[in-house]
Every structure is written in C-alpha cells, then in structure tokens.
Image: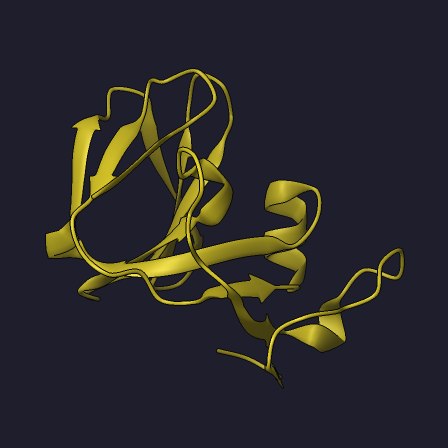
Length: 127
C-alpha cells in the first residue's frame, strides 16, 4: 500500500493496488494546471481509498473530463474521465518513493518551449 496527499493534508488517500508506469502529459491544460507538464500514474477506482477528502474539489475542464485539486492549498491531484473505472493521480502527491518509472510522454506537440522532453520509452500525440 502507498499513501499520498495534497500539500496541506486536506486531501489524503491510500493506493491498495498496482500503479501503472508514470506518463508525462505536455498538453496546454496540464501545463496551465501545474505550471509545467503533468506526470501521473493510473489506478483503478476500487484501489483508491480516500482517508480525507474535505479539501477535494472537482473541476470539469473539458466535456467528460474532470480534474481534482485541493481547494485549500491548490495542489493538483487527479484527472478522470466520466464513467471510467480508472483515476489518474499526480505522482508527486505520493508519499515517499513511488517505485515508478517514466513510461513515456503524451501531447508532445503542445510541450512548452522552455524544456526538452527526455526519458520514457514512447511519445504519443494523445492518450
């Protein structure tokens, strides 16, 4: 089991199952949400247990897509498609070492001009 939280602790969670390799998303929405690119892993909803969620706020960023963040400290935490049984979560929100590797990059054509895309085994136009 892994644990994670936002910066202030108003959102905290446990992961009770395997996590996918990390994926770096360079789309403009992720860059605006985080100030850089978004790096996430994916878990089934059944494996994600909230231990504190009084700070959790969901924002519909596109039709059928919502992003979860802490309304207290502003930490970007989750990304989810409506009706999906999987939730993407920010790797940086995991407490301690994640044990994950960077699998690859998506939306590379939208990447900022202030960094180079390195690492991972693939690059995709979209997810």
